[in-house]
Figure 1: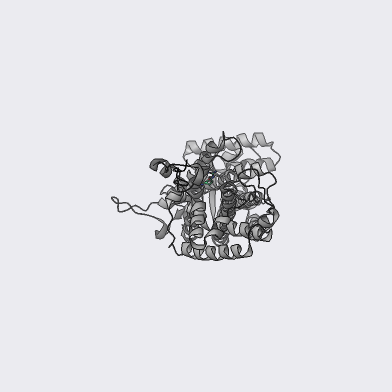
Figure 2: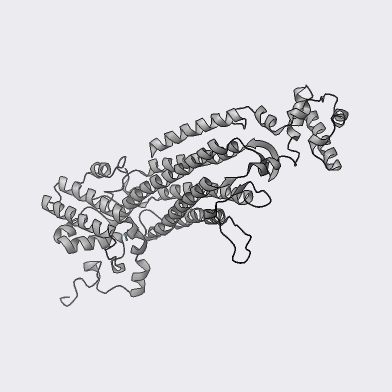
Length: 470
Ligand code: ARG
């Protein structure tokens, strides 16, 4: 009736006659987390406004006012002087309100032919694209540090393990390059995900585009997207790009955690293959002798964050009907948290690896016990024509004899070898020197010095290609 308030709800205008419940307003406000999308939201709005002007939907004066307003708002936000208001729900409404407060009606025209549904999908894709670039460049910087360590310290020998039991000797460079191989794939995966997410939802509107003659290819190109998404329902409702990002981050964090675990082991007194620099270690409040590898432990501990974020977003999405549902607002916190934690872990890992000290004498000492020569004893016989399975059994007998005698394989007399198999000759002992064992593994992908150099070259080439893609 005539006494009915026209617009008593601060956000939704005509349809509403009462103010929002306080708890409901707090429950639905997201600006605390999505204000992080401010730069992307402004970029998207400017692209939209310029397209509207080009299409004659808004005037050139309106566009000029919008551009001017956003320039001011952007610097205010960058200077941390903008006051975000939860009463205006999210980043989109906060910016629109602030713009309108500055420039009046032109600000109110900005939302022509647009919905927050295509707006937020656009913002998240723009943000994710940047996030991948930032994170991958950090990851490649980590790879670079490890490649340097391979060049400096790669020749040292140490045991490689299966089942955490000493297995065969390798060069340190070979082991470090195994980390590099994982991380290069992680970088590749992230950049692949970036390719697939780089399409524009803008212009999909709430879900079914718009009645205005918009040019979606124009906004897509202006924002650096490869093309507009070709189904408007999918454009506003798909978040698989976030799952892919979180999946890639999860795998990266799993890899960081495995390396962190090796560093925890290696810095223990039992291994003592490395010593952390003081800058990346911590003491104990009670035990003055302690130097703990807390940074590695924290990287390991925080590696649950991206997998948990993946699960959170996947569970949030799994039963949502098309198209947009408000549930989707809940994607922000897990995505931001997974990104922040992964980035920090990369930076800490880089500092730790750049500054740790390898202890080659401890590594080579670990080659002495553990019967690490046993495979080579078997290979020695197989090389002399003894069938490998038989050679394996002969070597096993020698290991048993050494266990019994409480000595190493190298301590057993030649006569003992020859009693197990007549094909053994005196040269068996020199063939069991650690250097000799490693250098014989001169196979592509193997630990011989030349192969480590070869792998270093291949890794460097992959790194260069990935850097190009950044
Ligand atoms: N803050 C919302 C989000 O992040 C923006 C989209 C709101 N759309 C809507 N129809 N309520 O998802």
